[in-house]
View 1 (cartoon, helix red, strand yellow):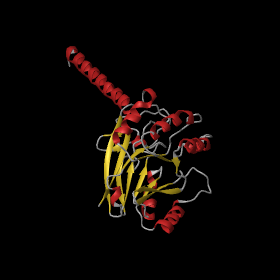
View 2 (tube, rainbow, N blue to C red):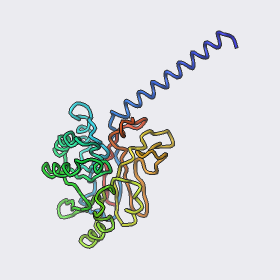
View 3 (cartoon, one colour):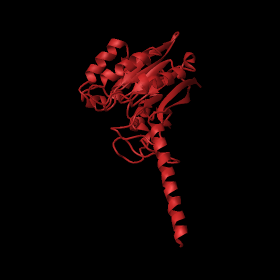
View 4 (cartoon, rainbow, N blue to C red):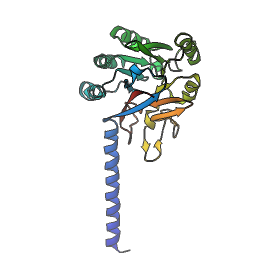
Length: 282
């Protein structure tokens, strides 16, 4: 190989390396700033007619993230989705002091639609979790702590239930006990469950929840083409549930890729994610 050809080969390798690094840096910036809104229609026989077209904006794993100046990008994305309700499926905060960041965000979200919340694992890792509950109660956010509520349209209703993350109090009500309570009072009503960790989906499907909304895996943090999410927040490779809709035994689960990274680890090829569930009468 001549010196000239060798120099050209090194130059090409250098250029390719620079281009790949540029693509990576652009993806890191895009994945950690751009909010992707994605719409999912799910159909159910037992959905009341009045709820056909009911829209739910699903926020998860925010970790007290800031979305541009005054978080305007977050509010704009949620507002454009025109949700009837907003649900937050855990890890709203991640550290002590985050409550002071998220309460103003919650107040602005409440100007769009009613907000419902469940805990994730990170809430229970802080000393501020009960302060968060108190602040939510003060401003009008509904925290579903192994509880359920009716959502009504006219004279018809559906059930919205929520479970605390398993890192919560050891003596808390278990999911099967919550379902027994619902069945005893509500019969075969359509039931939507908010549950932070998606790998419990089989359990929730077996209990009979029609739809489950979850997060936790942050889309796998790094998303590989044709493969999907690479890492769970705990460092496990190729977690099973990372985004979109999964079905089992007549139940569906919609998983959000979340709205932040984890402990400073950046998202790659994985934009911030707001899935919007649109309920449909089959």
